[in-house]
Image: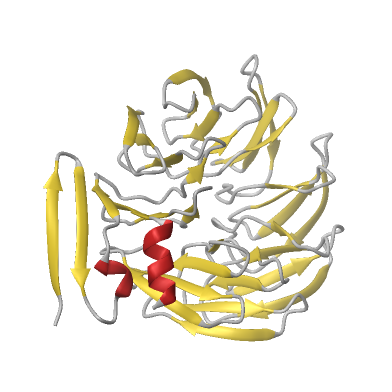
Length: 353
């Protein structure tokens, strides 16, 4: 038997439900119900604050206890993921054609014309941030004077770029091409998949190879010359980004409803079935526990051996990827506007049971 208790405080919901099979809900996660949907992936700042933006045009900053610090309303949908820059400012692109820059209190510092509709998380190189846009462009925006340089590619660029340890820029586009771009803003190498590269941000693996997912249902692993090393086929499009755990396991979700755990050479180690498609990207809770969301409305927690430690019902489909704050709190959000903070105390009890 399951029942729920909801205590309503202005703009804040503290929720718990008693269910022998849902141990984490016996405690009190902080839940905000705000207008969404939420497609942007949140980030944590250097000072352990949580930054998240919505398709409803709102940019929010919370502290690590789940208290809202500030909200800013833009003039367009926000699908992109924010990034904290070296000067500690927070940069985020918007569908209104601007890049916004905030301090860690959520106060607007400036906005610069972005050169298109922005879907991607930027990377920083010197005075420039680099990102993709509609119209088949990779854009280099100087954050000091607002000047822009664009590199033309095929079709819109929806996926976020990777800046490798040796400053090679790697980014995919909806044409299916994966582009390798040098510091002179020249395309050095490219590789063609058979499907869109959507939100799948390339991953620089521990061995130096590059992993990226495609809508052709495969995870590709390339070397630094964009030569195929191996690929792993799933039964559904790969929307999210792969991660690699400290013990070298590659984790990726697929729209076939499964979470895949692979060896560094592409052998299947374990597969976790969820009830619906997995669009969210995985994240590490710590060195041995992975967390990822599914459209079946659950966050899945499992170790790097593939053992599911538990799952938490978020009360809505999960498109965005979960994030772990420095204090150990896990934050996730849903397409129906639920933002949930799960504290270390809650998680400790959850895993011990």
